[in-house]
Amino acid sequence: MKKYPIAKPYIKIKKEWKRLTFSGDLRNTLMPTNSIYKKDVSGETVMAGGITMPVFAKVGDTLMIPDFAKEEKYVLEVLRSGVLSIGSKVEAFEKKFANFVGTKYACAVSSGTAGLHLVMIGAGIGPGDEVITSPFSFVASANSILYMGAKPVFADIDPVTYNMDPVKIEKKITKKTKAILVVHIFGQAADMVPIMKLAKKYNLKIIEDACESLGATHKGKKVGTFGESSVFAFYPNKQITTGEGGMIVTNDKKLDKLFRSLRNQGRSENMQWLDHERLGYNYRMDELSAAVGLAQIENIDFLLRERKRVAEFYNKFLSPYQDLLQVPEIADFNTHTWFVYVVLLKNKNRDEIIRQLANKGVATKPYLPSIHLFSFYKELFGYKEGDFPVSENVSNRGLALPFYIGLKESDIKYICEKLVKILSNG
Ligand SMILES: Cc1ncc(COP(=O)(O)O)c(C=O)c1O
Image 1 (cartoon, helix red, strand yellow):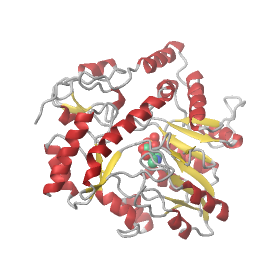
Image 2 (cartoon, protein in one colour):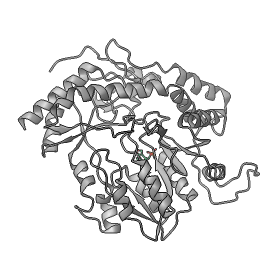
Image 3 (cartoon, protein in one colour):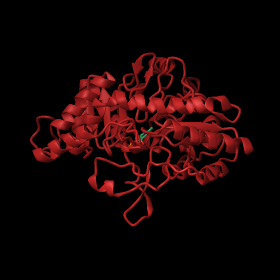
């Protein structure tokens, strides 16, 4: 196996991480969805911080990433200010975020899941209601409906975009349906024009789970601007990160006020701190996280451009092999912001392919399981295999390839060559 002279990618934001060294061969460091393996001080290979902020990786001689001077500066400003929560960085981050997405309001919260919980409350979802959503998503989207005592009703997905199919949504509408929780999966918008028509026709609310798709557009309109409220997430594998965090956006002033109260233990803006006007939560984003988020949103153009660059190299190397695999497709009128790069294998033995790729130093991951087949969903609702065949088909064949900012063309080529060779032999 070829050895790469790039022994020391490093993380800039946390000084002690500089002591960690990558395993000597980059091949051993390629992880799907942005994880990076390092050796810890005892020499053992570990995942740095679980999943690190991949944008910090320095690869070889080419620094393909910005340095994080701005994140450091803003975080230091917070530390030196002594205001670690409810301060100016959250406000500044919210303002810039709303401006980027194109909504009037943005309300920072502690995670995407917290944001989804609050938008469900805002939409007035409750026991006995049904909310139509995608089975092909991260579990948090459907769970947010369960938090309200309501029922997530799944509609199967489109085999090209992996987003909900509007025709299948319509078939699931009943008298109990209150809303459609649209998930924009993997960085690509759902088919919003027919979905908005359905909402109008049946008087349903639209809520967007845009956690994976910051910056993506449909017919020139950004995700997050279609629904009455929408949620983004900032876990480290997302387009921008705050470590943990999320953002709710809306054009509705009343809803924005409600979200601000709910995230802050039910206090209203001008209330004495000892009083609470409703049942609330502590879903606030702290100032340190917001400092990182602010620096990241100020750098969003670069971050999205880099994700696109990596995806385009994968497309270039894999597109000639459509007999072996399906590369991601971008639907007409969509732009993609590449949360992950997932191919669908035609070869059935995915586990064996993952194993063989691992032997070549390329770590890959099955991606993404269908929610209705999780054990507690099966127990709660009696779902079984075959209920949502398109989602299951994608779940059974999807393979996430290493994807992070700074991944070099030569490494992408290596990964693709190994994948194609293994698939051709299989
Ligand atoms: C589609 C989707 N919804 C919701 C979430 C939840 O976000 P968080 O992990 O910040 O709670 C995620 C993030 O992983 C996601 O991918």
